[in-house]
Length: 460
Image (cartoon, rainbow, N blue to C red):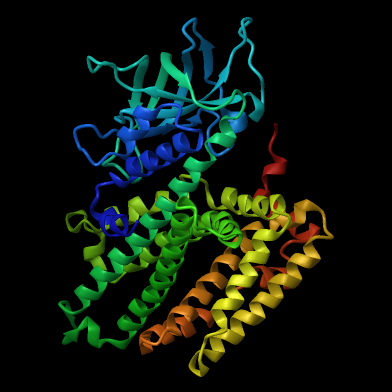
């Protein structure tokens, strides 16, 4: 992942098919190696044997609700294989060698089972031995805001020969490992984009002279760069910690707490760094003045490509609800692991970090109180707070990582300063939202009235 972090901003979006390839290999491995040759090709370092994999999930009904949005039908053949018929509306890395995709198996009457229990996972080679597509018709390439270097297409599957990977009806559950990997890859790409723009901005400030002196000698400009640096350092530490937890899980070294933290922090890291990347890169472009708006510099592409990082692999709201799911399905154990880990990281802090430690402990207390209170409310109330809850978990944990990093013997003054600056912000917005009544029934009504004012007068 460290290599990917360095490579991603210069990869021309090749990091996207690599993410799906990594995820596909993980899925195949988790299912007991049903297609060993594919796994070996997806993981080989031999460029002549190496395959990339697609991830063809999104259909016309689209989005993250694959359980109800999947309409592709799989027809069983006499030799045990399947032929897929359907329309994939958004398929990235269209030129991949193989793909994982979801479909509903039809019975001998042509009927399929609705809902998630009717969705199964398939693997198919995209090309035959003569270089022709395997029952795939490219309808059109997508015109996108960003990620233009990578082909994304609408595909018609017209008898695509495929192999069933999962048990029947276990497609959504089986694809979970792929989503874990691609969401972590997304996090790496987000942080890499942030670091690229901050590095470029810092370098530019040492060369560009305005009003008689270099940008680096204008305190207001340096203050802006400093704020971006704090965001980037916090995101980097979160990214590396999630990658560390993934490494422990993959090598069998993970403790129970590690496993719970990985489950909680994967969606948290993806959603938060995805939003951070857009804000940091946008602000970073402004540090170049008009040059940041000129295509010749290559800078605008950084912003366009960053925008997708909060969208694909689950939008912010979808992943916020996944955070709630992780809490519910673990009976709160993911939060116990979170609180325990944060407290452990704060214990070694020295006097210089006391304000940050006090801020984080106060936020932890407020978060615990909010969760305890929320347990007695209807589920809809907690869902309304899901985004702010996920943000709170992210900000508190990033603060703890910054404090932990600044507590090391070799830590520098900027390390301490970054931790202090981060913790001066509102690191627990869910408590602030609770105080202001953002999650009440009246707030729901007011939100709706504010958004839809005037529409109620229109004829249906």
